[in-house]
Length: 95
Image 1 (cartoon, rainbow, N blue to C red):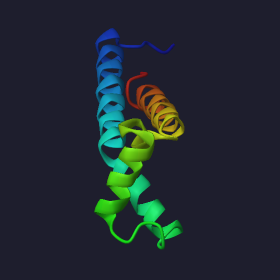
Image 2: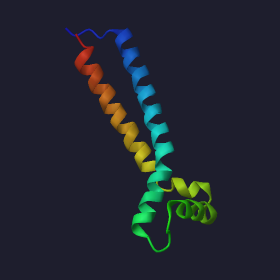
Image 3: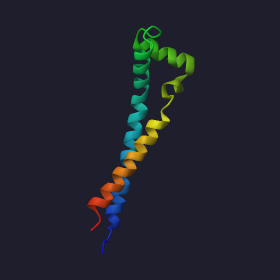
Image 4: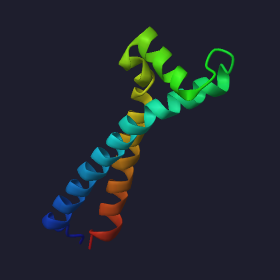
């Protein structure tokens, strides 16, 4: 018979939320840099420098233009956190 420790489950839930929040914050901070990098690689004639790329994106699309396409990485981050926390709970805390 397997017994699940309620304190262990609460610990895993807290770790899951903390990991998801940290991953999401990392994506929100790093995603604009990735957008600039990709635009520099794909359109080197349009954007001679990273600063010009950044300012043109903000001018043409607004600040939200730096986050275009950000939803998929956020969903992938949340999905991976779910499976990691679920497996962590199943392996370590089920006796």
